[in-house]
Length: 75
Image 1 (cartoon, rainbow, N blue to C red):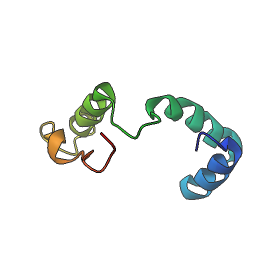
Image 2 (cartoon, rainbow, N blue to C red; image 1 turned 135 degrees about the horizontal axis):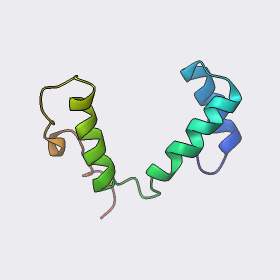
Image 3 (cartoon, helix red, strand yellow; image 1 turned 135 degrees about the vertical axis):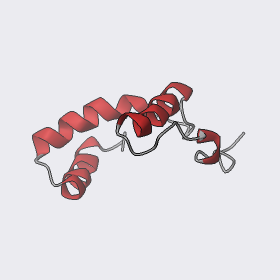
């Protein structure tokens, strides 16, 4: 996604059902949250965990260690 922004936006706009400008804004907002080594940033995981409660999808934050698996990544 980092290596070909235009292609990433083209694919994402079809999936999201948005126009190029909106998809580009989402890309610019979201890409800083992704890191290059594939590991989950603790702050991002915490925000995600809280979002389940905020959206009323869950009554309490889930135990993210059960949901995030980095065992396949290089050490």
